[in-house]
Image 1: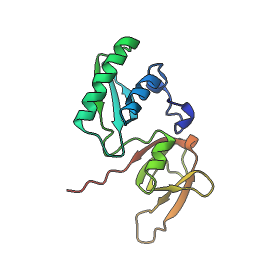
Image 2: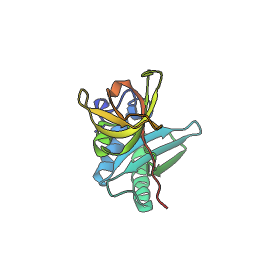
Image 3: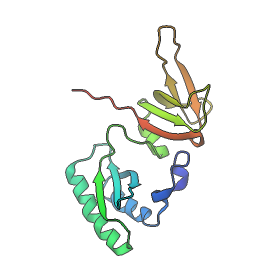
Amino acid sequence: MVNPEEFVGSSWSGVWSESWVPQADAVIVSMGLEIADIEREGNGLLRIMIDSAAGITVEDCERVSHQLSHLFMVENVNYERLEISSPGVDRVLRRVRDFERFLGEEVALKFKRAIENQKQFKGLLQKGEKTPYAILVTPEGKKAVPYVLDFEFADLAGARLVPHLKF
């Protein structure tokens, strides 16, 4: 069940607060997957990104699309096109459980208010000393000194994984 308290900052809004989301979440969880994000586009596109610890396959997307199409018909969910996909390498972190899952990973955080004239930070996500989470920021430059930035979820405007691609 989708719970607004699970969300970082004010990211529980818009499409996440629609009445069908808890039912879709239950269907997806019953398939051993989770909702990573939901978006509505102006052209009638409803995009649902799914994830699991094992990753997502095309077959997973097909199964979810099939199940949700039936649910949405019964629930009269308004959309023109349904797109089911993985969240991608620069996955949005929306829920507290995302922060737990990606501890130790590099993240990009955007704050609602500037901290020492800066709103955006990149660093390694870790447990905070004063708050539930923090990031270890390593500034660029020869004399730059790494520092830990503790933060409250309510201070965040957004959070994403920083992609690291290996070819």
